[in-house]
Length: 347
Ligand SMILES: [Zn+2]
Image 1: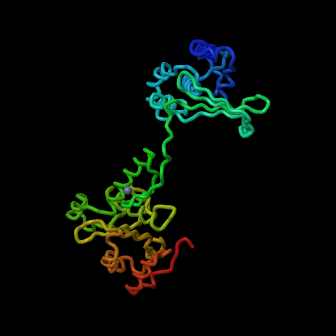
Image 2: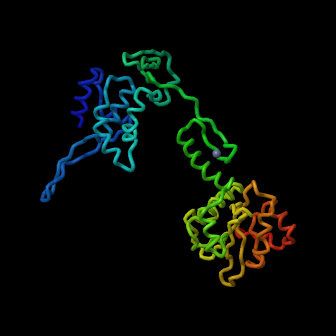
């Protein structure tokens, strides 16, 4: 409540005592005051409420005031609130600020408060270094009115801004210098390298023994097959710039007729994949080859050619769905199968 906050100000910093409007101060930092009530008894039909600020928002107020150079210590409140925050799954900005306070204290980026759109009219700048090490700059207007206050934390270091980088191995674009982006790249790198530089899979070796068509992926196939084909579909999407991955997810595909194939080479490595879908449900005959992707390292080694005769036998005169890449066009010419080209399901 307001009286509690006034007490904190009184105890810590005389500059804040008595001569600030706490609600206005909270508005600057977008901290909402709310009407709250004591839980009414079952038979009560009226309650009396009062205005208060959530505890986490009080902590945030103290954190922001310290950031402006006031001599406060937000730590006791931060520590008191920390256990309850750590048990939450979603948190507010104030709670995030509490969570990171110990790590960020005295290192936060400069804080600036500005009278909207007026700072450029400043005619006088005053600089001040506080005993806490915080440095303030106050910009004054012609009539001696304050226009901008900016405060630098004593341990703030300007870091080089993250740089856009493309990984030469996996092709992932990320921002070097941003820890989150680096972690994302590491995760993605592992996934992509499994596809780009495939290694023997134990599940595949197992399927060789029990599965009459280890390459085939249908709606009822085991999860590992969906994972493998989905990763290849993701590469296809990236390479050809489509909006969607043409396989539902790494968990499966809801199309009961889908026929995906994992291309295997002579060493039983997965070197590519493709998917056929039944486009004309009524005749049950009109199949479309929706997408084909071959791992770059294994292109021009006859991967698709090895399966082509089998596909023609199984799916008849299927449509090679467009847009068809130049490589696929050349392939169809070589196979004498240009008749299969030219159908675009999106037209
Ligand atoms: Zn990479």
